[in-house]
Length: 185
Length: 185
DNA sequence: AAGATAGCAGAATGAACGTTCTACTACAAG
DNA sequence: CTTGTAGTAGAACGTTCATTCTGCTATCTT
Image (cartoon, rainbow over all chains, first blue to last red; front, side):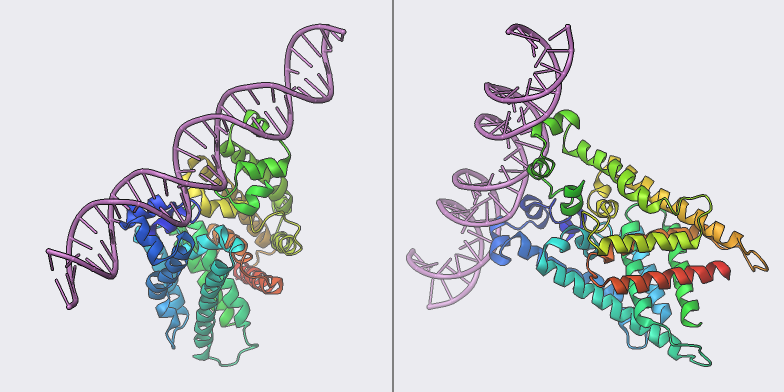
């Protein structure tokens, strides 16, 4: 997972994988079947070990905007502190590198995006359910959730060229504050 | 440019380039020096031929939010209509694939981001200069511009997995409307 | 017409790729 | 002690990679 994460799919060779894992070539082929199948397994593991811990707070039944904010802050902190093995988000990297040419991989990153979308939307719904007095119109939760997914993906991309974490924090806080105003409008 | 755009840097071979350009291998090497130098030239050309036409409206001296909106809409339309040779944005793709491991390429995509940032910030400043009556506090133009750059990058990433253009339009319009409210606050 | 130059197709090259095959080692069960 | 099972290292294989080299064919200059 770490090798694919740091080098990308194409630039990762079997030699790199053997070196990093300590396993033999034969073991990799007998256990997974090949580079492509191994990468699919890696994507699944990434979901379990990286996405789930980060996103669990948003996926709580009673999550609101503050959980979304915690998610974003958690991600920036991890990226900044070097707590992540690779740069950016493996899923986001995969979306641009291999997903357009590979159906199986496309389906997995699509499921990931759907997961984020549903999590965000529920949190936004919960947010305004606490005080739904004298509202003008119901917010377009789908559009706001889509917007947030897009922003989250852009954040991963941006974190690869923007070294200044403070700048990212400012942008995220500004974005979430805008969402908050939008929900309360 | 088209080949790198569609296949990415690593997955593009000299054979692909020879086939698509019609030029001989020797010509490519004598004219550019190699695959890497050719890619750098491609990034420059991308700036001139793709980014500049799309971004010129935002970079006008008197550009405001409506020009930013025109930029986003222009990009979605082009992506949707198949008017673009490749998927997503070559710069955005390059950021995730090669920029973290390559200094020269990193500098070029960084310059691109800076260009977007400055364009957006100026447009936002122009926007509120038209009616700066009874404002509470000056907006944080840097944060809003950074946020918009992040969103623009996320939009390219998302457009590779979200096929529904209407969904992208909705998200963009929502985002820009939020920015508008934020600027007028 | 003669010479120079440029661009072409395609072979050659050495390295690296993913994948498979071949011993060899360690260990468990009988 | 034999036998079977796993796992290892590393060679081998066929392909493809980026890069270079070799002729050949135009086109242009004088």
